[in-house]
Length: 167
Image (cartoon, rainbow, N blue to C red; front, side, top):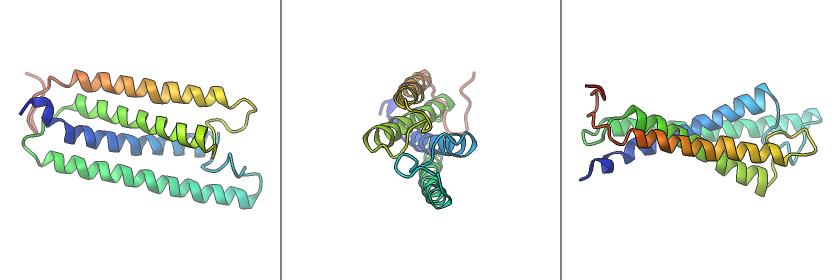
C-alpha cells in the first residue's frame, strides 16, 4: 500500500474540522462581532425585535450544525489516531483544515449568498456582489489552494503516530 493511501483518515478529519471551525469563525466574526449579516437577514432583515429574534434562532441552528461538523471531525481524528497505519503529519492535517474551511466558505457562499440569497457577506449595502465574490475568491478558492499546497508539503511525511517529522 502506498504511503499516500495512509493519509485519507487524517485528511477527512481535517476537512470536517476545518469546515466546522470555518463555520464558527463565520458565525462569530461576521454574524456576532461585525454584525454584517445574520443567517436569514437577506430574507428577513432584523429591523424589528421579532425579526432579530428569528435571525438569532437561525444563527443558533447554524452554530449547532457547524458544531456537529467539528465534533464529527474530532471523532474521525480520534479513530485515525488509533490506527498505526495512518501517517501522522501536522502539515497534512493543517492543510486539510484550511481546505475544509475554504470548502465550507465556497459551498455556503454559493448556496446561501448566490443561489438562495438568504444573506450576503455584507448585507447593508446596495452593491452586495463585490463582497460576495471577494469572499468566494479569498475565503474559498484561495484557502482551498493554500490548504492543498500545505497538504502537498506534508505528503512526504512518514512519521508514525506519536512520532516526529524531524530527524
